[in-house]
Image 1 (cartoon, rainbow, N blue to C red):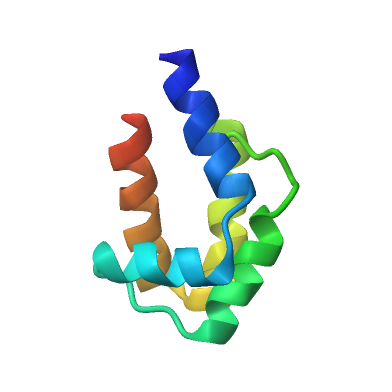
Image 2: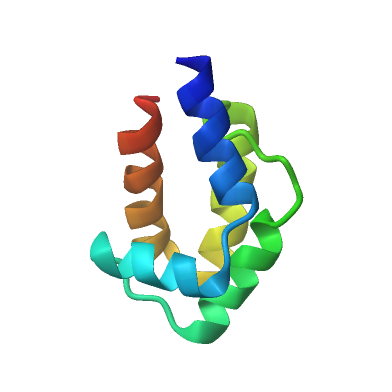
Length: 85
């Protein structure tokens, strides 16, 4: 299981704007290019562990400031589906 967690975290910490836009679209979360760029900036190189609630929640709060509470809740559900937390 740790290998799976490591792969997911590495991908999130290295995601590009285009990848985020593609993935969010597949999951039904609409993001503008500007919003995606801001979220990528939050993630890139930060080594955030989305499986750790203490690290995930502050990230979600920052994402909420960028895209609003409704879409941030969608992202939270997406994280939940990945982590089971």
